[in-house]
Length: 95
Image 1 (cartoon, one colour):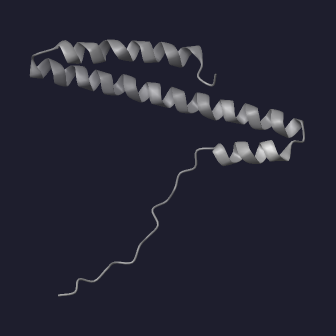
Image 2 (cartoon, rainbow, N blue to C red):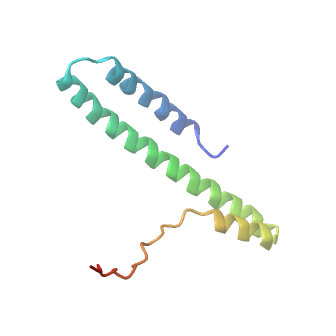
């Protein structure tokens, strides 16, 4: 499994504010709870990304030590790559 115990603990901590948001009736309290939930959620996402990167890195290291280039290629293709928005030509309006 690629997620570490610390990440799972953060996920469990994230559930409590979410449940409080769902139970709360006061709008002011909801906005405060949503702000706290947002902060906790960002920490969970960051931790999960770090765990995944570390896991993929470890897989690539073990595959490269075995000189299994097919497996190395499959792992590097699975890496999260940020895609850029390809600029599309602007269409002109025809009347």
